[in-house]
Image (tube, rainbow, N blue to C red; front, side, top):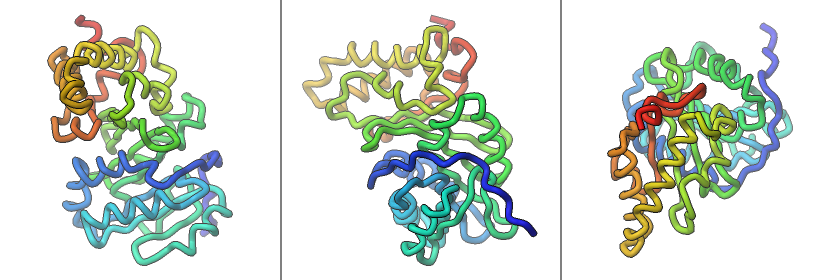
Length: 276
């Protein structure tokens, strides 16, 4: 059988140690059930487009092993030179291969999780939906998860869309390094590709970030008790204003909050912003 040509384009490859720790913390937290309940053998997780250095794939493997000892991580890159450079770090449960959105894995295995961070950011917005669809088709249909995210160079601002087979996008997560945060809308420059051009009046994500900024200012007095308390008050007030927050204070204390996708889906104002 001939080898399928990798689907996608080579990214800039910029990466740093711990750059994706915020998303990884979410994977081993609220999403850990996907690995724990998987009954099809060793669960496979793909780090798609890991970049010029394999460090984020190694870190992902280390973190997921705390959830399930037989998890296997496969780092995929379109650039063969990057794969050759990474292979000396391969070990049982961690490997590297050439591949793109077609997700080439041996046999009929279906990944439980595919993490694609800072990959689609370099694509035209018009190509996002097809990349999502192609990748979702390769996932485990029961517990599969695609994470399409973006972060800054040091991982201090991060956001990601979660998608499931048969459902498509289900949520948007925003994660901040709270120390030094001026306003929540700072994450606008690090929104996933599907949303970054939608941060304009009339779009749900614009209305959401505006509301977070408004509540952040209103919660300024909480700073006397620490920036974490200010963020907790901000998210609680945003939820009370009608925005569909789908996590709780345990995540907010980490500088992280997740919203239902329908509130920010591209194409117009969300139901929340329309009602206000």
